[in-house]
Amino acid sequence: MRSILLYLCGLVYLGMLPRDEFNRRSFVDENALMVGLVRREFRDSQSISDYAEELADFGVDQEGLMVWLEASFSRIGLEVYSQNYSAVLPAVAGPQAASVSGRSVYGVLRAGRASSAESLVFSAPSGEAANTHGLAVMLSLAKYFKSKNYWAKDIIFLVTTGGEIGVQAWINSYMGNAVKGINAGPLPGRSGAIQAVINLEIDSPKIEYARIMIEGVNGILPNLDLVHVLTHLSEMEGIPSALHMGWEGVRSHGRYSKPDLSDSAHKLYTVASLMAHQAPGLPLAGHAPFLRHRIDSVTVRGVGSGPTAKPLLNLARALEGSFRSLNNLLERLHHSEFFYYAPSRGRFISIGLFMPPLGLLLAPLMLEGLSQWLLARGFRVAAAECSGSGDSSQQQLLHPPTFPFHSILGMVLPSLMSGVLLLILPRLAAMLLTPLGPGVLAAALAWGCLLSIFLPLFSSSTVPASSWHMTKCFSLILQLLLLVTVAMMNYALSISLVLFLPLPSVLSQPSTINGGRLGRVLGQLFLLLCSPPLSILYLCCLYNTLLASNISPSSDIRAVLVGGVGVAGRGLVLAYNSWYFAEAWLFPVVCVVVWPAWLMGWKLACQTVQEKRREESGRGGGKPDSSASHLHSD
Image (cartoon, rainbow, N blue to C red; front, side):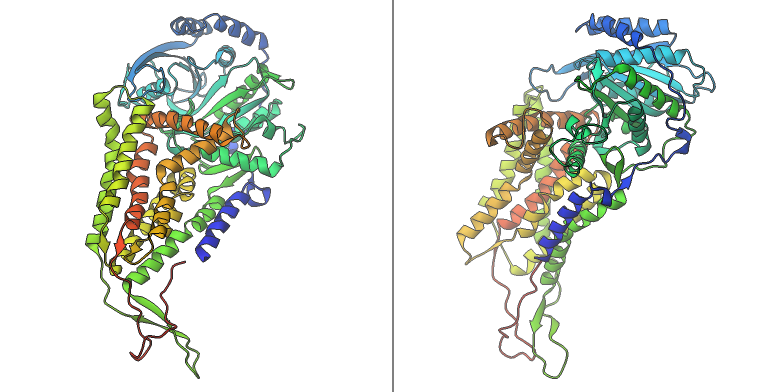
């Protein structure tokens, strides 16, 4: 009961963190940035409109667009270079082709006041997403920046095709690293060490607010100072900013009208959305590949076109101020936070505040593991009435400690081998059918999971009562170390795992020979409902319900499930490709870590205890004391 209370306290503590009383006010920690102190002078809105009209004429002609961009960068006066690349996708979704090829064009504005030792990157994607106005803003700012002589860092204006694969090909060639599966040509022109990256995506001539996307591969976040620079300057130009928060949440602040939900509910929704984007650790935006190389980067998306929309000039001026602030840097951003969550534009939650709830959520694993250790070592607590003395209990060591190596290895090794099997099954399927579609990929993994689940049912063994306690203790401690380690790298992923892994592991235990069959079946059914594949489906349904515009929590269960299955299929393909190209950890971690951790509890539930532990007598070796009891777990 105490473990359940601690777990509930951890959930309540975690839900209270978005409130202002439990977090801190935002501030810029790097004084050299001097945010907002320089006057923003860009006012050429006509240039943005002209560029947008010319870009719209190309439509889907990407090759013609790239040639035109090269010519435009040359007319501005930049050093213009290009790179061709090609890649073979190991898995595809829908009608997508198995191979991807594209071209990256970039122009370099050399610094007038310093050598080319450092640089900033202004990127904008081109291709599937309609980013005509984002490219127009980039070209207008490039033309304006060229006319100024106060730049102390080179500025690279980068346009890529092919989504994150194009960015991955460019940055890895820039850093001199080869990418498995991507055949990228060498970069003919280079600059200095990249200090920061701003990726711009705009699909409308007017915007209501700027959505700041910060999550990178494996949950890496940029320095918080970079986020504060963008949000602060956007506010100064009259454009609200949001971190994965809908426009209704933005309007809940300042001079905008108050929506139906409370301010605290919107802050909680914002943190939940941030965690939902961070937990998978997949490259969901063009800035994500840069973060793998310790380059602070963010994506700015202009959203909306309503009655309160602002012209693109306001956002362009905010970007001008951001680059001028970054131009003042004397060293990399390092003063502020790298592990944080922002419930609103003016508040943030640091790592020192959100780690204690995780400790409370992990308490059941620690307490149950300790309890199983004591039971395995043979401790009992015998209640005894001692007249005339203050002692009410004593502990007796009933038998010498033993460590069941064979039982532990018999549970751990098959579970790990099952995880390795899941990891290699898609590659085996790819030998027969290339490329892998979502159905084939899911079927290959489903066969591996079903094989791992049914084998313990048909080969259930009988274990002595003296060994299963130590076996369960070992599996719980292993799972505890796993979740703590994951939390140090990706806190959101660890929280997602804590919601599903500890409870079935704590409750799993073998059945007795004389035990009821109904209880055993219900226990196994509960473990199956908490299995990783179904847990991923639950999270995908929640993710789709929170973020999709056509799904609401009040929708029927069928619509929620259909949307969740669709998200799971696309996410499976993205996770497999991201592991292949960007070394994202999600797919291998689920296969070789999360699945074996759950499977150990499943194998334990499929076993049968040979005999119950004997009730020991009280002090003095007399008749068994009716008040003696086992040391129960919490």
